[in-house]
Image (cartoon, rainbow, N blue to C red):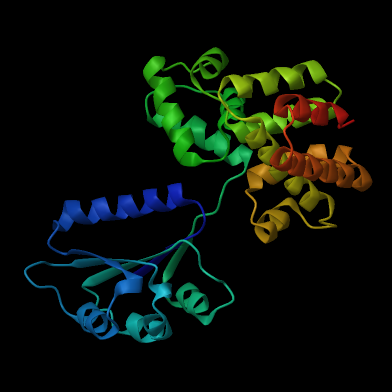
Length: 305
């Protein structure tokens, strides 16, 4: 049996690999477990090894990470698949597969391929609610969305935050989330830009000051602002593409796309172009002139109307 684990969601991919590995170890022990870095494998040695029958064990589990990086072996993938004995299970870990290549098409057709994609905010919130229950805590969907909004779409970070919150109090509330979790810079910059465009300059400046108190430099805030404007520009020029298509083609997290869509809808394309031009001009000034960075960045934000 050959299993392929792929996709950009490293948290879920790792969890699946750990579950399968632990299940094998529990049943057969560690003598039959082998791990390889595909790029460093000697083709002839690996081909002979993968065809071998188990020795002193009932079954073997061979885990190979990024076999696709080994051109010789990748070209022989059909031969490898055809010659794996029933007593051997092979797990190919391929986080970044090019779906245009015959290698991917062969894996999809002839192996058990499981793809782990990034999740949107709704999926992440549902996952958090379920995980909280499984870990002995309780979290409602509204507060789960709040946590996702503060931390972002990184499931590993969300998992760590969930453990911390449950350790504090199994009944997770909005108050405990705001007390114990620190909003990611990306999430804060989105809120800052959203408040600015809504004319809520007081809130925008408060959010800016919060980042400065956390020792985030004005230049870093400007860089994050530029990244957010880049995402908005992609959305604004995406035509009739769906959020899923935009995320896939632009290599953006679906969470970021959906979160930014409402802001993009409020902006005209000329307005967005001007905001990007002004941000670029300020970035050049900060790198070439001796000016007050805090004052310059806050003035830029206020100019976004």
